[in-house]
Length: 340
View (cartoon, rainbow, N blue to C red):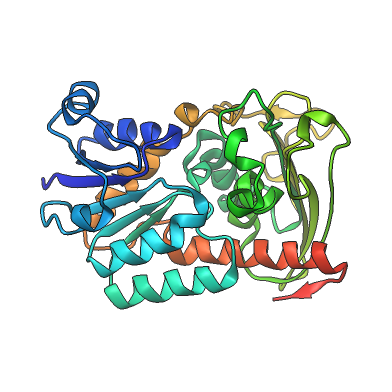
């Protein structure tokens, strides 16, 4: 079995989760880290295992022919530049969300990856969580019938107590409530209901609490989606709340409904007056160490070995989610529905 060498761009909080998960797959090993801050190769190697080369110059790392894959963990505003450079260097790609903060940058990334012919993994890792693997299995087994309404909402107060806050408040890298974090919920909604969205209407607002006053953009939005098959959906993205982390999920279909980790199905003749319980690990933390990166990266490296695009979270799938996000943010900004 080939073991892939991986280079990391950006050595922050999320990078530490990537490194641990990549190494744990047994299919890959982080061998290089490029950071704007000086790093000690000996210290990095002692912490993560193997022999890690530290770079300050991205071009120098990309010129290293021993590196097969680049994991982009830099600031969101730098993702397009770094992804395009890595693709041109012929490196396979792992890309943190959001992919980009504008449709123009997204299009440039997609074009560069297509031209280079490299494989991709975008970190919508919630698709590989226990919660959504089980939820999707319920949907795919037809236990809910035809879904005509769904809502997946993201509640996570990203305040001064959270490491991301120091840069997340700036529009340059935070973007919007959907781009910075709510994208996980919108992506999960599209996973369950399909990505063929024809129109969105979005409204946004902002907490009056001084705790969140530093944000340069609105930190709560609610988006209504119309699907080509006639179904409708809703996604709230709330990053200015005081409450436990909550990934609210409610799907309603012709044969039953699902609410978080509970469901009822007419096909199973369960009691519709009482929920049946699904046994699964819920998404209940924004801590990157709790995210299902390893399951996702396992799928990516397995697909690489087979010369295939990975399922669920390749660039094409993630780009569709971002297109809906950009349309939603445009709707919130103009006060008008936006057709896709």
